[in-house]
Length: 107
Image (cartoon, rainbow, N blue to C red; front, side, top):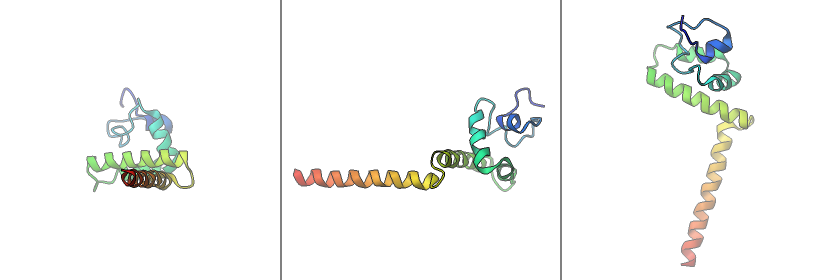
């Protein structure tokens, strides 16, 4: 048993062992990170990803970052999530490009 259980084991009310697949990615110092991912994707789905032996530790880390980012986007915008954020940034970029063209034409 780990002296300070990871945030996943705290939420799931389970014993955090040295073999816990959640512990490296959801430390007890970041409980909101697991809360978001669990709320959107469910602990069982995250467990399946993290326990997949074909993924390297680096791939698992990237997966957790992606899940965390997508969960945060889904919470902020339940309909479009990351796509909505991407579209908003694309609109800003296009407006800036138009401003650059306009400024060049004035010169």
